Length: 194
Image 1 (cartoon, one colour):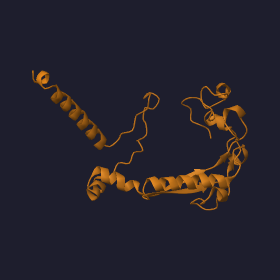
Image 2 (cartoon, helix red, strand yellow):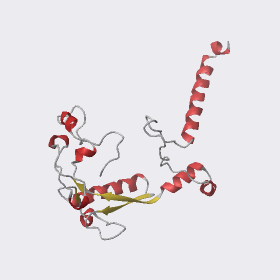
Image 3 (cartoon, helix red, strand yellow):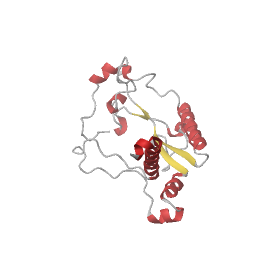
Image 4 (spheres, helix red, strand yellow):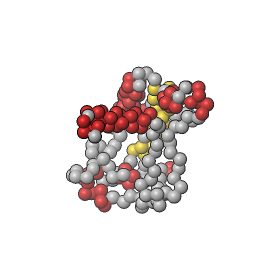
């Protein structure tokens, strides 16, 4: 009867309940999604989500603070640049050849600048390039210094075109998408031979 007499109270109560549910969901840590078909992965690896220890949570004061504090600082990222052999020309837009390693350095510098800016200078990306010219265990600071691997079968490198690993950047409905049907790719569930 009270809902009939006071309809705004019922609406307020429902809106408040929805708000509380959203607040509680936002405050809980995210969880990784399991495999789509569990039969394909009977023993999936542990998710790669950072789980702070009890000591880290106590030191930071809360779970959220512990998660945020560990995400700040320099992040080392390994980069391997590969030049693939010729394959399905219509499956990839643009040139399949690396035109200029200096341009690639510029792309990675722009990405580092972007992350620095949007994180308010709390995250810095440190790219380390590994290639045929790399003379140090820790990698090189630029793509120009590291060079690009040429996947041509020589020296133990694979001899597969880029489409072998995924059919280019031309998606369904594009001019080259029909050609992807004829590209040889690894069998489903098979371990990839690199």
